[in-house]
Length: 202
DNA sequence: GACTCGATCGGCT
DNA sequence: GCCGATCGAGTCT
Image (cartoon, rainbow, N blue to C red; front, side, top):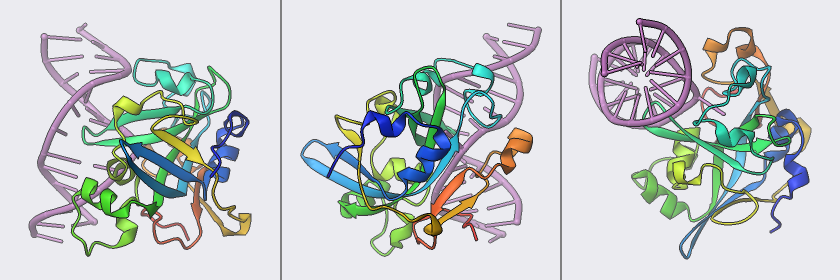
């Protein structure tokens, strides 16, 4: 399994969001390894996007790692309960990122279920089928904010190629406050994959 | 220093 | 379908 190189991330958030589908998140915790295939992403392309934390170049302590060079992690807390994992894209100071919304467990699903505190009979699609769930399943929190995704305890590696006909495109979720930007088609899902979060695109 | 609200989720109606 | 949980950044005073 090959770790994605810097060139992969140094492109626009929209392109990287599409290409991340099918790739593998590899989370190392001590001796344990958890692997999950990315099946849903959203692009937050930077200063000109009202839904993006870096809108109009806003740069604060919370979103500082969004301005790192492509290939770093941006993790933030939302609603006081959950974390969201992003991959920073573009060049340093761009403020672009891709939100990783859902993944399919490939290895270590039992540990992910324990992390989530799930009953054994809960459907597989509910283990990491949403940004908050995914972070909890993979034990991702603020301590991973700003780390490199090319080495260390959280990396993204090559995976299967998803054909463009198998990619469903939809508006982003939960960004109604952003006005017209809420309608931009920047959400990308693997068509028909049961791990994709709700609302399911057509 | 006080107030507001968010890139969510799960339980209850 | 609706609502509450719970926290910290952001904004305004």
